[in-house]
Every structure is written in C-alpha cells, then in structure tokens.
Amino acid sequence: MILFQQFLRAMRGAQLVLRTHQWIKLILLVVLFVLFGTVGFYLTESPNKPELTLMDGLWWAIVTMTTVGYGDLYPESPMGRFFVAFPAMIAGGGVIAYTISVVANYLVEAKHREIRGMNQLDLNGHAVLVNYPGAMKVADMVHELHADKRKAGNHIVMLTGAVEEIPESLAMLGVKFVKGSPINDDALSRACVKSAAFCIVFAQDDRDENSDSYNLGVVVGLRATGSKANIVAECVSPQHRGLMRKAGADAVICVGELSTMLLAQASQGEQIQDLIEDLASNRTPQQIDSIPFECGGGTKPFGEIADKLNENGMLLIGVQRDGGHEVNPDRTLAVHSGDTLIVIPSAQPDTIRM
Image (cartoon, rainbow, N blue to C red; front, side, top):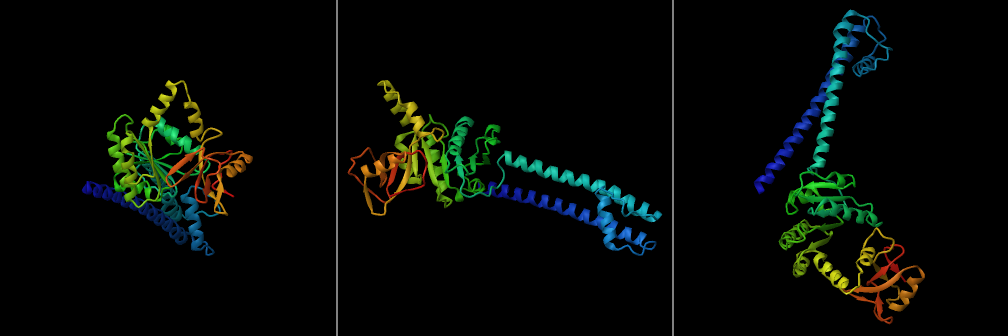
C-alpha cells in the first residue's frame, strides 16, 4: 500500500513536471519569435527610417503576431517583408493556435481531475461527507446543510472511493469530490480533513452491521489527522455507539433505533413521525436547536428563562449539561452559565445571554 501511494505521488509529480515544461516551452517560443520580429524589423527598416527604435520593432512584432495589424508601422523593404514580416505572420498564427490548444487542454484536464476527485483541495472550515450511501441521501444532506444559516456558506466535500466520478446531481449542488478511501492518508489530505469544521460519516450499508466496523476505522483515521472537527457518525447497531464515541466521534446516530421508536409509536396510534421530521429539518420554519446559555449572575431559574424566551418567540423545552439532558424540567431548576438550552426558536442566535 505504501509503495502504491508513493507511485501515485510520483505520477502526479511527473504530470506536474510535464505541464510545467509545456508552459515553459510555450513561453520560450513566444519570446523567441517576438525577439526575431523586433530585431528583424529594426535592422531591415531602420536604415531607411532612422527615427525607428527597438520599441517600435517590439510594438510591430506584437501587433503582427497577434494578427491585430494596426497599420501604423509596417515593413517597406523587400527584406523586411519577405524575411521578417512573412515568417512573423506565419509564426503568429501558429503560436496563437498552439497557445489555445495548451490552454484548452489544461482546462479540460483540470475539469476531468475535478470530476474524478483527483485534485488537491485548499479549504478551511468546510464540511466533509464521508462514504457514499447514494446520490439521493447525499443530496438530502446537502440541502439540510444549505438550509442552516450558520452553515450555508460552508463548502461541502464528498470523500469516497465508491464512485469513479461525482454524480451530476451533486456537482450541480456545488459539492466538491475527493476520490479515495477515507482511511487513506493521501485522500484525507486532499480533502483537507484537518482543517474541516465538521465531518459526517455515513454508514456504507444501513442494513449491514459490518458497516460499523469500517466506520470505526474511519473515525480513528479522521482523528489521526489531528483534526478538531466535529465528527458525527452513523451506525447500524446501537451496541456500537459506545465504541464510536471512544474512537473519537462527537455524536453517533443510530438510524435503525430511531426507526424502531417511530414504528412503536405508530403502532399505538401516535403517528408523530411528521412532527419529528419537521422539528429536525433545517428546511422547515421551526426546528429544535441547542444554543449555549450565558448568565451574568451565574444561574437563572428554568421558568424565568422560559418566560423571557417566550416573549421573544422562542419555546424552551429542556437543558443539556454534562453530556445529559433534561426535558421539561421543574420551573425551579437552576440553569447555569455554560449550559445548553434546547429550544424551538423563531431565529437562530449563536448564544442566549441573560
């Protein structure tokens, strides 16, 4: 594996050298013909026009080789016309055609590398979506992230080795693509995981518990980069939630467990799935949010905070602290500065201060 990675780096280095040589060759070719036209025009025309300078020759060479031809300067001697002007015109057309081909080839290659996820990204504070559960699920996640005003400006990167190129539906949403295994150092580096704001790790197959074993290694790999990103991992089995957290995940979502709860509620005639979807989605007017609480006096009663927030169109439903939460607690519960309030807000403030 190490030898293969070194081979890929060597190939990328060789391609870079070839592209550099191509641009150097193009620049030298242009300079050579410009010098030929400048000096040739000056030497052949200056005997009959002593007022001409090398700057006049340079101007003539440029406008002739670019096929502009202003007509303010032109060779009058047979030597200047046939041995300087004619080669300059032919060379100018050739150089322009060659330049266009080099630029077009560079643009096509750059687009090809972008679509196939081969580029080295240069991002900071972005979101990384790891694994590929399908274009529809990834697109839904992108829409949710775009709907969150606090994350709307973040670039979104999909990191996976499961597809050869990014689906057009995701490219149209502005998703950047890095092809490679999320446990490969080169792929993690190209996706700029170390400087990412958060990473969302999808389960490869939400019906196969072996996906959890793979994602366990993914979470370890993400943390091994030194990333301080908030890592959210999807797991299939609730039994693996603890291992995911120990591996470095900040939050672990077990979709199967949530589905079981909703099915149980529906069997009792309590069909609340639509309500939960509305409260969880960023694309609905109201959703549950957790907002840090700061209090100048140290503590405030839960009831007093609830009444104050209600005046501002916010519904306080609970408090998070020390990794746990209390929903609808007693109104006398002391809420400390540094706790997190669970609210349904009309807006999304960064912090609630009282």
